[in-house]
Structures are given as structure tokens and as C-alpha cells.
Image (cartoon, rainbow, N blue to C red; front, side, top):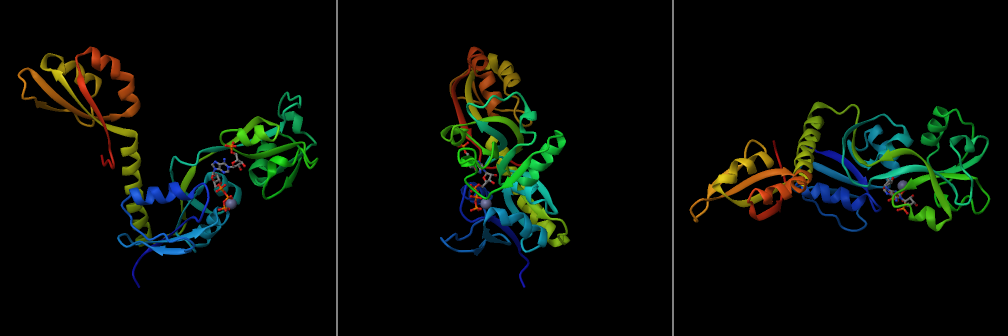
Length: 286
Ligand code: PRT
Ligand code: ZN
């Protein structure tokens, strides 16, 4: 049998598009027909399982899948034995406590003896314990935000991103208890040959991530300001300097973090840089 590893990704939901885009950016090709539950890459030894996100930590822990891409919130809530290999930087959100907008709230003691509705009983339970609060946790699987208005609970604990769902339901966020983003998880007992393939995937993910946060910058400058410009955009090892056809001018090429570029843009212009181009980088290997 061909040696391939299996990765579990969300079938359809908030994680799906970004998970599959990341895989594609890693140069891994596969056919993703609608409704398919499995797919094998045509150019990398990996097979995809398309699952509900709730099931991913369990499948990875059991070894049905070797790797998975899922929210940290699910990883911690399901409390399965898996290794987190890498934070992936997308699907960022937070798990927060919220109460009715008109409710007077002076601190987490508010929740003492109260009912709280949530789909995250473990994370909430751990948080309340750490705060020495005794509350009744009502586990419900969806539409948590309507619980206060139907008299089911005085508070809720749910995922918040923009905050508009809370607002639309007449609620206010009062405590942030957990921060989450998508992560790459792995089974704890991968044999060496699977670890090697997982490391190859991780190598590519790192290259894509570094590329995303960096830009290739090209600019023209009079030769006398080159030294100053180099100090502003030092690059990976050092910038490339090429003479322009016009006497006394050079083209400077460098790679830098985008934030660093914006911080230095005024000084670059003041130093005489012109014709500045900022180009995206697809992959970066240091
Ligand atoms: O069907 P399946 O079980 O696979 O998917 P699901 O419906 O359980 O999950 P899905 O696709 O909604 O979310 C998958 C993961 O995305 C979550 O586990 C989080 O890690 C992450 N994520 C990021 C979010 C949000 N942002 C988010 N905003 N998950 C849910 N929400 C919901 C939240 O529950 C609330 O209803 O969006 C609402 C709040 O959003 P705002 O923007 O109004 O604050
Ligand atoms: Zn789910």
C-alpha cells in the first residue's frame, strides 16, 4: 500500500474555505467535489477526510485521521489526547460570557448561583472553577444566544467574532474566557514515516505563512541615499542593489515584514526613494 497520511478538515463551515486554501497554497492538489467525504491528493501523499468540526479532535486522537485542522476551542473542549503542531492564524474568535444588555454587571461574581447556557461546558467549567464561581451550566448545542430571552439562563457563554450576534439578541459581552484560532493537530503516536510526511506539510505551511507576512519591495533611489535606505529596509540577508540605466541611480530590492514597510515609508521617501513597488510573496524559505 502506498504510504499516505490522512488529514481531517471541516466539511462545510467557517473553517472549510481557509483550511482548503492553505492546503492549495502549499502546492497540494486534490479534487474537492461537493458531497465527497474523502479525497486523495494527486501530488502529495495525503488523503482528506471531510468531517464535522466537532468530530475532528476525536478522530485524530483515535488515529482514524493522523492530522486535523480545527478550532482550538474544539480541541480544548473535546479534551482528547492530541498534539497541537501549529497555530494557523485564521478563524480567530473568542469564547465569552454575555448577559442581557440592561443587566447591571460588576464582575464575574454575578454568575454565582446563576444558570449559564453554552455549547462549551468544559471550557466554561474550567474557567468558573478558576474564578471560584459556582454556577449551573446548561449545555445546549446551538442557538445559545436566545437562552436568556426565553428564560433558560441568565447568561450565556458562546463564540464571539464581530459581536453582532450578541447585539442582535440584546446581549452584552462581559468576560472573554478563551481565545481561539484554527490549529493543525496531530495524533500523539504517529509512526516515524507519518511524522516525516507531517513535517513536510508543516514545512510548506511555514513557508506560506512567512510569505504572507512579508513583501518584496523594489524602489529606485539616487546612489548617495542607498546607505540610508539599506538601514531602513535591511531585508533577509541584505538588499540587492542594481544600477539603473540612468547614471547615479540604483534599484534596491528587499524583503521585509509589511508592518515594517509601512512604519518606514515616510523615511524612505524622505531619503529619496521613488517608484516604490510592493509585491506579494507566495512562499518564503529561510
Ligand atoms: O457543521 P460543523 O459542526 O462542522 O460546524 P459548526 O457549525 O459547529 O461550526 P462553524 O463552522 O460555525 O465554526 C467552526 C469554527 O470556526 C468554530 O469552532 C470556531 O473555532 C471558528 N469561528 C470563528 C466561529 C466564529 N468565528 C463565529 N463567529 N465559530 C462560530 N461563530 C458563530 C458563533 O457561534 C455565534 O453564533 O458566529 C456567531 C458570532 O459571530 P459574530 O461575528 O456575530 O460575533
Ligand atoms: Zn460543529
